[in-house]
Image (cartoon, rainbow, N blue to C red; front, side, top):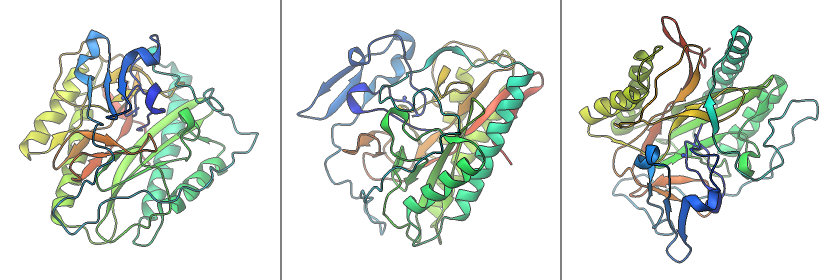
Length: 350
């Protein structure tokens, strides 16, 4: 799923959002931040140099595009919802500090695999339910409340809640929102597309998934973007197997997106997931030369974000919501997968 901590402490993932990319270096040393221009650039290890430019320097301007769709605007955010004391909580709850990305991959024994299957299955069921709520007039805050209740009713914790201070239990990213959208009072409108990003923490393991849904009658341009984004994820999963270079994921996604002239967002990545929310490897969704191979028993996410126009992200003043620089549509899909002897297993499906 896609998250970022507060601005001065951000290791952008998709927790660049979803995958934070460094845990050993002091967070402040990773960024050059000029409050006057609101421009951020990351100082990263050489192996991650492809993620160095964050184009957040226009976030206070109006990003109008020449179409009938209204520009996305923030609504009112309601108070965070309580979680019963008996539910197991991840260690970051109660701390606004970024836990960063855990060094080392998430590789599981048979018991761990079964735990990952359980958390992934619940995440998929929650996401499927959330998708049924997408209708014109429904507030994204209402989706958050429903997701929250379903997760705790199943004895799990909604992983986004209080992750580096994130105020909600799910991310809802509408239209030009690339990721990290905070559920609020905005009502969904006919023709919207919305990515719902669900992660659950069940019995000590995270299951992480997202999908982009149609609200009412959606135009062909949006439908095609969503279709191709899902295809990018499916094609990337199809090449996964023990010993395969992780960088093949990015090449596979980028090659397919290029056929349709879509941009691939670079600042947000997939990541190892399991007992911790974000672990190695960092999974880049664009062509790259990073090293690393997939390991038997390893779990990680793949979560490509495609855009019709600019791939440059702009962050709102809430220090979470990330939208396209030019207001063009963005779509995302995500699965958690397990590397098996015969290839890979999608853990986040019903």
